View 1 (cartoon, rainbow, N blue to C red):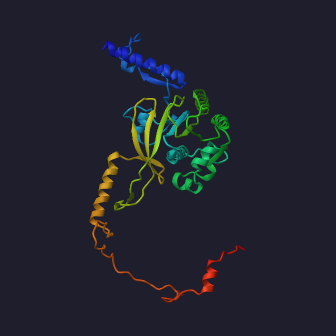
View 2: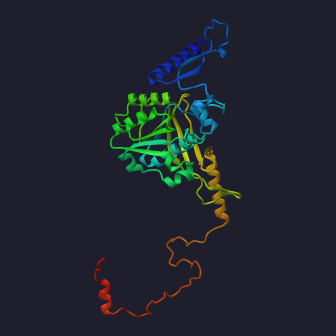
View 3: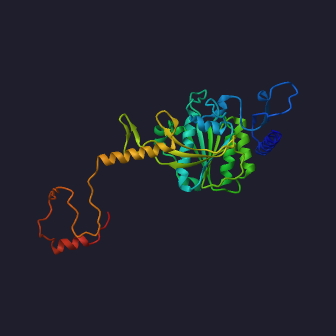
Length: 361
């Protein structure tokens, strides 16, 4: 028991030191077992305060709606009432490869939709916008979100999503730092590529500190990036997941494409617990639904059974036989209107006119 208490105290000391370096907010932790009690309180009722991300107010977190994911990100394990992404903080969303940029952007737009869902409205009646910042190379590689699809898929009006295209990364960081302190924005999204040297621990500390003071989230999207030390308390690795079949009244529709899905891996969180989830975005209700890993296998097996019940006639494969494959069915041919009769050939003058170059205009 003594060795267990010493080991737990060592872990708490290391966590406090890491939180001090990262500059995060206070978090409540249960006191180590066997700690000295001068006021007569039980050990289970005693708590210590260290520098972490936890905040007592429930609205300090952006909940994804998936209880297990929210708990691993920072809530109480087994409690669906707390946890999620911290709102007043810097959050990292990584894409391991460049081709994952679309999934990273889609997941970020889903989070922005969750932020705008409570209808943050200004005094004039207009909604708070979201500012998306990036360099010319980033937008040239990944493109811009489709304006007409913003409302249909995420409930975001085109005028609610502002873009700032900077010529250099230094300019993009300056815009992000100035925007992070503004309370007139619902959220700030900064998209970078790779692991630039300018985006170091000091730069992320400034972004995190200004997000804390403004009480607004800053999402750092990183294309083809490797994990490195930053001040962000949460890091998520996002990649696209195969879409499941479309749900209908009669059940899943085989061969169809359903809702967009993301594979989410927790790279860094307050609880330091790993986890991997497959989330489906429901554009109608604007919520995330967790898809069990085995559910897709069950759906694929059901689709295979449906194909076995209703086989489609196809041409048989070649296996070295000399006989041709059986005809698929009756073929009906219609003569083209105005086509020449069989054996007719164009005249020499017509052939030369056809082969001669044409002049535009």
